[in-house]
Length: 112
Length: 114
Image 1 (tube, rainbow over the protein chains, first blue to last red):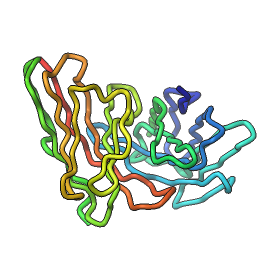
Image 2: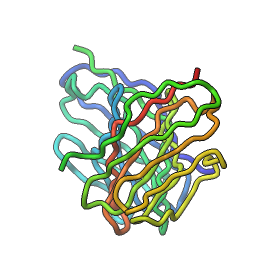
Image 3: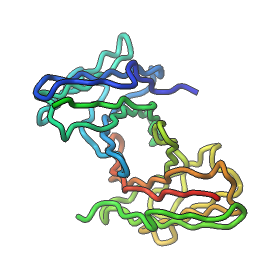
Image 4: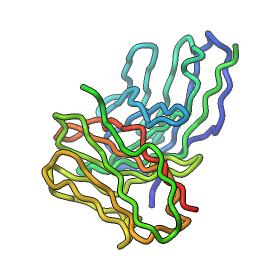
């Protein structure tokens, strides 16, 4: 089946720098995307979502960019903090369904 | 809003035993989802309910797995005759009705099969 994939399994950034986490998806029928943050021993926590009719959406310190031409999704975290250390997943939903497909995740390590 | 609650948090059992997990969704959410997550992987969809109706099941959900949501509120996931390969984190999520609604997850039940 088609999956959401991630380019980098681990990303290390200095505290205060910006982080960019990338995700490639392969299903052109996907119309809704979510970024989740998962800390050890906890369930995924919703960060931000974006619909396929948008190419950018901003939240508090986070921005999601969607490039449907190349089927690419990114999560930008501004002024990365130690509390941002976690595994980040992108998830896609196929149009007309309620099933979300997750990738394997990227571990973000924030260095003091 | 107390979030999605899952019980127990941890379950250790011997191979061949039956186990049951419970999920209490966010109260106003009428959609409920079950996922399985193994170490280093993203959650894998198992099944979902809209109110009490189970509307979709993954092929991952073998005959040994059954999920119910009898009154459209809490849900249970039962695994019969557990196998080593069932060891995983079982996550529950809920969402509002309608398309493009984010799912909110509980902290899961970690199942270990001895």
